[in-house]
Image 1 (cartoon, protein in one colour):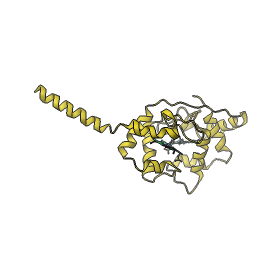
Image 2 (tube, helix red, strand yellow):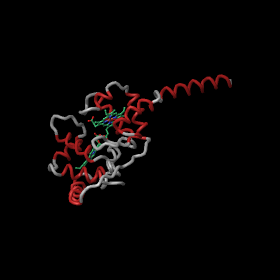
Image 3 (spheres, helix red, strand yellow):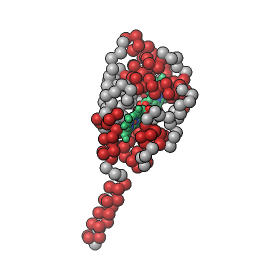
Image 4 (cartoon, helix red, strand yellow):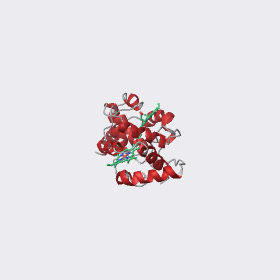
Length: 190
Ligand code: HEC
Ligand code: HEC
């Protein structure tokens, strides 16, 4: 009886190790080149990804894989991954801490950004981008240059961006509002 129970326990343990997928840290290391160690990016047009919500990370990588979301680079990278690998990568980066990289910005742009955000973005992202709704990523101290590029994608008719409410909100802004909002969020440490 005891032996039988032990065998069952071992089989169960092996099964759950397999369910957890391959050792994802090897694959995750290939992301460092662009997204930085621990997913904290050191380059202005490259996003930090460590500490973003797991469901968010998994869903956008799957959108790229299945051609439901446009991208310059990531669509090609995720094409070769299984859904299990994508889920494991999402879990791996979601466990890292979110490390904002607050960027300096002049008072005029900061004030303008604050106004744009309290009117258009705060409900979902929080006043500083650090307290978002659960389906949105943190963007306090995310790279402003990257965010501006992302927002421009929502305004580009030919670019596939699936989130309807983001699209609607970003499309009603004026051109100067995009850099202002991006720099305001990028300047926040909390
Ligand atoms: C060659 C550079 C490069 C590599 C390597 C790379 N990425 Fe990216 N990543 C980008 C770029 C550029 C973007 C912005 C979207 C785009 O244009 O493709 C991005 C965006 C992302 C985003 C969206 C972040 C957000 O805040 O919305 C996630 C998630 C992501 N990458 C995950 C990964 C993972 C996981 C890996 C490793 C398996 C990886 N990336 C490897 C360049 C790279
Ligand atoms: C209705 C809620 C809502 C509103 C309003 C909203 N957002 Fe978003 N935002 C989201 C969600 C949800 C996402 C993730 C979208 C996805 O999964 O593709 C997002 C994504 C983003 C991203 C991309 C982040 C990344 O890491 O790639 C930026 C930048 C952003 N929002 C900025 C803004 C700005 C600036 C405003 C105001 C002008 C705004 N958002 C208004 C919900 C919202």
